[in-house]
Length: 176
Image (cartoon, rainbow, N blue to C red; front, side, top):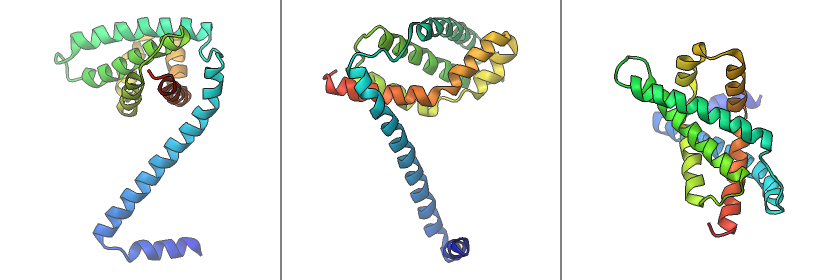
């Protein structure tokens, strides 16, 4: 019954109303997603402020390996950009974002201060970085263990986003 009511509601709209409804739903979804991340970040903030290490030494060594992998990919993208019809420019955007993320995460592990603006800029960059072209171009060349490491890193992007949001609040609280 509620579905019938919603269908009637949608059918009664003109095109301008449909566009507005679509925008409203989009912004509600974005707000819900942001709220979800902020609530998860809130649980990290107290741990960070109490001095708990959120990035382990094992994570730090993995970040160093990922930095080498992404640096090599960046060099290849720069060499091949414009030389091929393949999407090296798009892959390079993702690689640059991941290199920045690795740098930020290593600085977090080393307890180095990170300005709020750097964190916010990176969160914005994350929202448009898409791994699809990188995966398509580079995965065939990687060994299984490197592929697994990259997929694991990619799969934890939402958790890292929560950590970055937490650090935005911590950095703001510390006046960075």
